[in-house]
Length: 145
Image 1 (cartoon, rainbow, N blue to C red):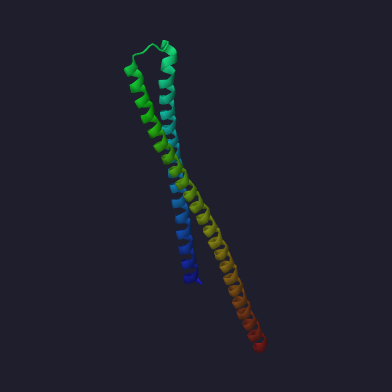
Image 2 (tube, one colour):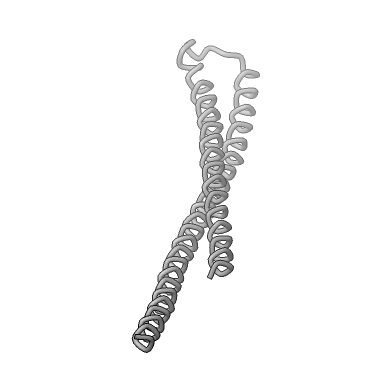
């Protein structure tokens, strides 16, 4: 019984470790999503600030300014598209790690149930053996008296 319990406990420990690792991975993925979303928000603020500059000063500018502004807006648009892809990738990883955590929790619960069932089984076996031993002792005492 002891060696079986030991190996079941070892398997349970592994499942608990996998769950902990999954929790850590999910937390890191969630942090990455927040960082990527903040970077996207910064790009949006830059675009908004660039567009508001014209409204603040009355819009009297040289033509070169508008060429430069158009190029800068195009660059920001490209950076925003790249950042949106980064955010989406981070969200996909977060979803993947969330599913890994769900799977790890499910496996851990299954293993805990198996351990509990095995513990009850071995307790019943031990009870039957003890009962059989007590019956033999009682029979022997009756024969001796």
